[in-house]
Amino acid sequence: MKTVEIIVPCYNEEECVELFYSKIVEIFKKFLPQYAYKLFFVDDGSVDHTLAKIKMLAEAADDKRISYLSFSRNFGKESAIYVGLQQSTGELVVVMDADLQHPPELLPEMIRAIEEEGYDSCAARRTNRKGEPIVKSFFSKAFYYAINRVTALGLVPGSTDFRMMTRQMVNAILSLSERERFTKGIYAWVGFRTKWVPYENVSRIAGKSKWSLLGLFNYACSGIVAFSTTPLRMVIWMGVFIVLGAFCYAMYTAISVWRHPELSTGRATVVLLLLFLGGAIITILGVIGEYLARIYMEVKRRPIYIVKETNIKMEDNPREF
Ligand code: UDP
Ligand code: MG
Image (cartoon, rainbow, N blue to C red; front, side, top):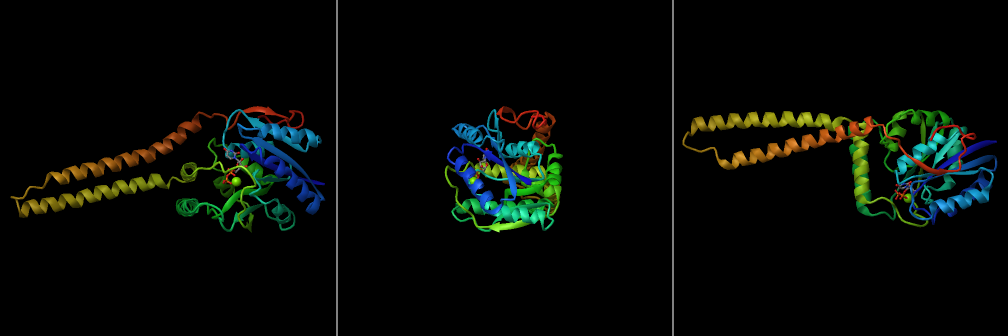
């Protein structure tokens, strides 16, 4: 019997974990009786009772079906996904949100795509964003447009982190050792054949989203910086453009002074030029700084997460935390 390993990042999901678990049990019983399943809850430093709820489930299930691991603080969903993949051992691994926004009803189709249709991974794609603020959808569109212009990743708009993968693909993802992980980009970067299953957006079953607009904006910027050096090249072009502009302006001034020596060239021009150049230089430094910061954070080689508590035993799974 094949086992499906389900990785569930949880941050303040006390209201969701039990509902999530019962839904998974139901789906496997009804549609996938020929498959065994294991759940791996990663508590991403929740400050509510998420961990207690997970422990209760793990004790009640008592057949090693549920494992959990709790971080010492909130390291972010990307770190939670990483540890999940790192601790997984099976042939079929799937990452799902705890809030049931990733419909477990899609699991049979995902398994079929990999087992029967020969795909390496199967991911879910939202076809609409019903129930989401318009600003959020607008920025999301802008993000996909921008990242696909400056990288060759070819990210699919509406793609989610809900994805089932083969062991081979999981190992490829783990071979990317960067600290700041932009999972969407990593999935695309490693390649392999992916089937996309569309689904209608569903609202959260309980609790609220952890993403603020500013948080999403920062996430989008890190994604672009992580996978593209185009902004650095754009900076060079900007410099060239400014120099050319300055040259043209110098020619124009020389000609007008030659033709009308009595006219003063003007203080305003100097002030405007100074402001323009100052602004341009600061922007350029900002872009370079963004990459420098990345290098700085990466060379420190800090761990991607720190474990506080877990029920995984080293003899069961001798992978280091
Ligand atoms: N999550 C996490 N760490 C965080 C933020 C979120 O592990 O710092 C988890 C969260 O518990 C949920 C999933 O990531 O299972 C998606 O988060 P959320 O539902 O808040 O995002 P949205 O669906 O609104 O994009
Ligand atoms: Mg959600």
